Image (cartoon, rainbow, N blue to C red; front, side, top):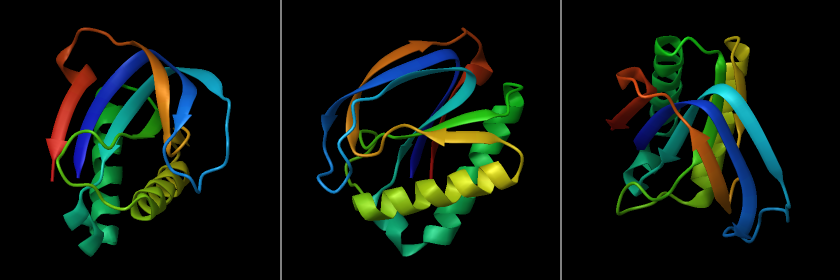
Length: 136
């Protein structure tokens, strides 16, 4: 798993192109403020330990959210950070599980539309805690 964690003063998106045929059609745009955005890439080898990967994901998201003094987390499947990819089914299952665990822990956790390329609009402050990369 690769994680690019960016604290955003503002993060907006609009759906553009569906890449996972089994996902519903969407024409959606939204904006979130004061949020940690997790750009999350699941790798092929992650499929061997789904519970462990989900736990690492949740722990790192909570840690980075605390560092940036926010309780709002946006999960974004971003399959562009490594050479191998997990299946879309695996990625969606782990994202859903992580979202549930974050909400149960008192965080406001949401996901960008899964299986879509998005137009992105990002405003992030220039401080070290606002940008973190993790590789597992």
